[in-house]
Length: 381
Image 1 (cartoon, helix red, strand yellow):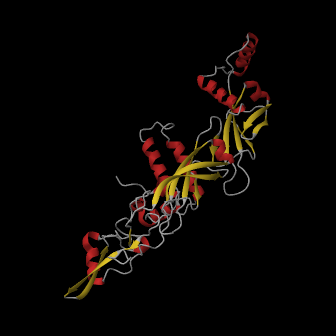
Image 2 (cartoon, rainbow, N blue to C red):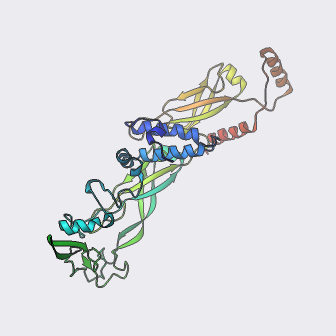
C-alpha cells in the first residue's frame, strides 16, 4: 500500500512552519494515541502521524522529502545511486568500468589523505518534567571513537610513521594503461595494497592495532535550556567522533524525552491542571490555593462556577525556548460530590435536591485517584 503524503497526514500546507507542524502533530497524536482511542485503526494512524512528524520536523529530512518524496526518507538513499551535487555514484553494474575505459577515470578523485570531518552522534536523554521546564546542567557519558593516545592517531607504533604506499605513491589508486582501437585508455582502481588509504603501516600500534582510533567513554557537560519539550533536539558542536587526517570532529545531537507529570499536563508553553471544588465552593464562591511549578498561589473562584470552568494564571507556564517570557497555567475546576455526610448535611442536601430537582451522587473511584494527585502536587511530589 502506498504511503500518504506527509503534509496530508498532518493536515498542513507544504509551506507550514515548524510551530504549525508541531501543533498539528500534538493534536493528532492525542487523538489517535492507542491508550486513548480504542478504534481498530487508531494505532496505525498514530504511527502514520508520528512518522510524518519525524520527517517534517527535521529540516534536512524535510528538504530531501520535498525534493524526492518518500524515496528521499530512506536512510540508504543515495548510497549507491544518485548523489545530490556529486551526480552519479557507484558502479551501476559495470558502467563505471566503461566510463573509466573511454574517459580516463571519470574526472578528479578524492585525496585519501585529505582531512575529513568526524561522524555525528545522537544521544537520547530522558529528563523529568521540571527539568524540561526550568532547564538543568548535567553530565553524560558518550561512547565515541577518538584518536588513539598511544600513537596519536597515526596507527603506527610509537617512534615509527606510516609510509607512502609504493604501489600507488600515496594516491590510493592504481592506474592501468591499455592500448585499444580508440587509443590509449587509463583505467583507475582502488589500490589493493593500501586499500585506498595511500599509506601503509609496517609496525602497527599495539593499542589500536593500526586503526589509529579507539572507542572511549567521553564525559560531556550539557546545559539543558529551559523550555525544551519532548522530542526537542540540542546540537553540541564538536562533540561527535574525531575527524580523520586532522579533520574537525563531528557534532553531538541530544534528543530529549520528557517524563509525564502526575498532576500537570503541558500543551506547548502552557500548563494545565485540575482542581477539586465542593458544591458549596462552586455555588457560593471561594478563594483556593493552587499548586504551580513555582509554589502555591491563591485563586479566586466566583459564585456559580460550573464544573469544567477554566481559569488562567499568567506567567506560570513554560519559559519560551527561543524568546522571553513564559506561558500560562490553566486551572480547570472539577466539582465533586462528598461521600461522607452527617445526618444534618444529608437532610439539607435532600431538601435542596427536592427544591432544585437534582440528585446527589457519590464520588467514583476515579475521583479518589484524582484527589490523590492533587494532594501529591501540594506536597511537591
